[in-house]
Image (cartoon, rainbow, N blue to C red; front, side):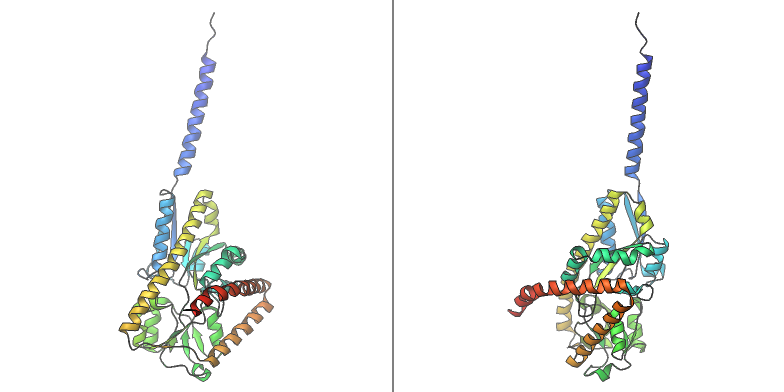
Length: 359
């Protein structure tokens, strides 16, 4: 007498059903689309800075096979160009693109992660971020605010700014109203100027109306289209931002909700975009400077006098010492940057600098 194989068939059927259910659930999880919103400080047509966010969103979507969809809102839409920190912290936006020194009034230790006067150049600073402990220190600063911060692209060394009148001595800086953010603004105040911070979209109007007497923006690639030379023809060389880094801000709660592979994809998109922005900045600055130097004879390039530079250096050192004395975390960051700069600059001097001096 043959035994019934119904139990066996039932077991097999159950196993297949379970396997299909598990496969379906896994497949659905893998195909889930995560839609993120990014707010940027810049206007929709800002060169290079505006390109970076669009490039990052496109790259993340392609690498994730469509599972990451990022909407970019420019300053003209969200109306808060200097409010990115709060909007991402609160979860109003999942991501942000801005610059770390804009948050000095909220979290002073954010100042150190954009660029410091007389500090590291772009390549040196990238090495510090990824090989010298900079990323870990940045997490210490941003973590308590429900935020992660990643390097977001470097505009390379920035020019010292546009001035209506020539600067021949420290006396010429006394009471000078200048738009300059971050630690450099603190330095300017220490040597007698009156610094302020103004959103990018208001710079030309502020200069034209006399709200400010001078301003620093970025460099030729960014400055040329702004037309600052029509009002302030003196264009000063660099001192305050030798490697000006932007940032991608991420709401940490939203980050933790992403699958690990999408976290890796997003971080990779940040890093590739940052490098692309750096190379784009160098190329665009070279092209724009060629145009400025040949087609705009009214632009008068100047170096700050030695007296002024020495006063700025002294003010920078004094301010760093004061900040380190007030806050253990500030001290940790400042000392880390100081140690790394001493090490990496020794190499820069006998490599890049020696090569340039030989040409």
